[in-house]
Length: 416
DNA sequence: GCCCTCATAAACAAGG
DNA sequence: ACCTTGTTTATGAGGG
Image (cartoon, rainbow, N blue to C red):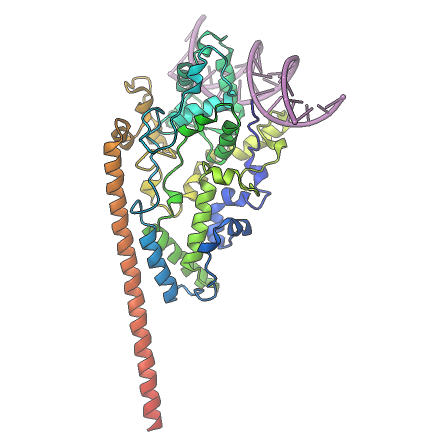
């Protein structure tokens, strides 16, 4: 198969682009924008007014922010809401959507699938509503899609487990407290490795299988949530205290976007970027089976609370409620959430879905309603936030004019 | 020939 | 005791 290459975040951290992924929240906090991000940014959005809006209180900044607020509200225009649900089964793709997932594996039912175990596992996990599956369900999915394994020697399950264990692309998430080392952990795809898996999938003969993948909708939508605005304001307070210049919202927006891009591992555009900072990894570090490095890498990539904390950090600017998302995408859930009795679940795969997922899993209509409702709510919040900003700006303008009039009156009195 | 990826097998431990 | 899950090690095939 095509090599599932370049999967070492540790190595990636050596490249400038890697920082975008590895320490995004830190980038935010540091207030430094990697040049690579700047370069990758559409120039049109980089208005050359950095000096002009250096001040947080600059009205140009505010004006721009309000423009952005109107331009980036959730789902209100332009940016399509990508549903990760329409293609869970690959068949019910709405008209106008991406091409159907053709189930290439079903074409060659008894032939050995052209995918490596890593990709099979990846596909299985990505097919699940919550992007998390226990080993058993991964078996089932593979068996379901590739009857080849029904007759294949039983060793393939060993291989699956072997892959899950050894491949850093996959993270184990304990279902509940008492089962730290017990049975039935859930396996997720490490978001950091998704681009690599995607890339590997693209190299497969049946690249149409990619269409089952659905990118997380929230971050790259570029919306300006109140959380985001608050976050910028808070950061600017800190920066001011530190004696640094406040960060213009525009810059923050750009960072947010750059981060979102980095987080959006499904972005094939990014995958094909020439600098390929997010995906260019030292092949030596990829999927390393050598005993010495595996130990070290596992320490780095797994023991760190399965990177989940970093994922959470990465969502810094996004309302917590949207971490899981109404659509269930990017399903890194809490242990409580994932603690589901899958054995008794009559829904099968869809049984892993949260309530929101369950709402949407049938025909997609209720899900759209929910999402629409959510978008409206967010829009309202955005409007409120914009209103608050305008209010503040108004106060500032009033104060400014008062001060200036007072000054002129002072001067007049002195002349007299 | 070397290195890498991947598949496969096997041993072992822990838990249900 | 048996099965499942998870980890680790070893080995070989295939490709660049």
